[in-house]
Image (cartoon, rainbow, N blue to C red; front, side):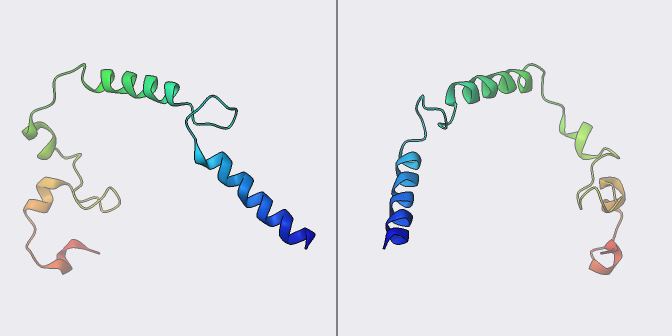
Length: 88
């Protein structure tokens, strides 16, 4: 009975901790730091003009089937629609 009470009280304590994760307690999520970091990353992403689609779509560094296949977009455009030619 003591073990069952210990388990039930433990689950209740976990529930109280998870009930409000946005606060100022030690184990709460630090939303202010998260929002500050998100703002900095958004500033970095939007500080330069976006590239033209032709600059990155038709690039030799664009691997549409994943980087492990070594098939760039220009070489993939030359392939037939037969799945066996992909080398998977």
